[in-house]
Amino acid sequence: MGVNGIGGLFFRSRDPEARATWYRDHLGIEAGQDGLWQQDAGMTVFAPFPADSDYFAADQSFMLNLRVDDLAALIAGLEIAGVRVERRPEWETTEYGSFARVHDPEGLPIELWQPPD
Image (tube, rainbow, N blue to C red; front, side, top):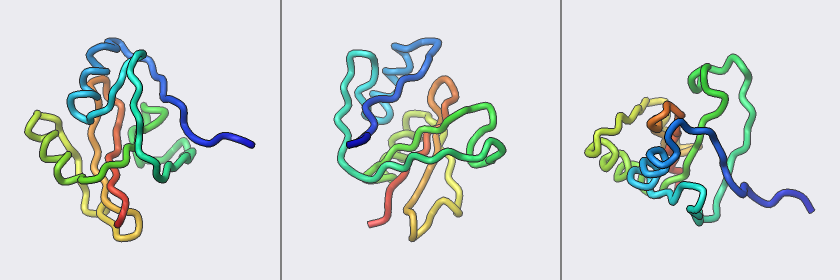
């Protein structure tokens, strides 16, 4: 009994079609009200952060974290497409894996995460 997974993530958008297209084109996520994205099974972190955390922008109430198989390849494709990718040395860990950050067209922070092998 209880919850067994995340069934969806719904968020407001000034231009839902353009935003859904960005997610499809750059991250391979079938987005939109009629889109159904089948994600691979794996770890999902569900964690409230302190209100004064500086881990992501204070003007955002949440950050989307997406698991990826090949972070380096995804970063290369994003940069070729002109998407700014933020990387920091402290985001490369043996314990938790590798991280990078992008922002969607409306400024939502998206953390890309390649878990450790």
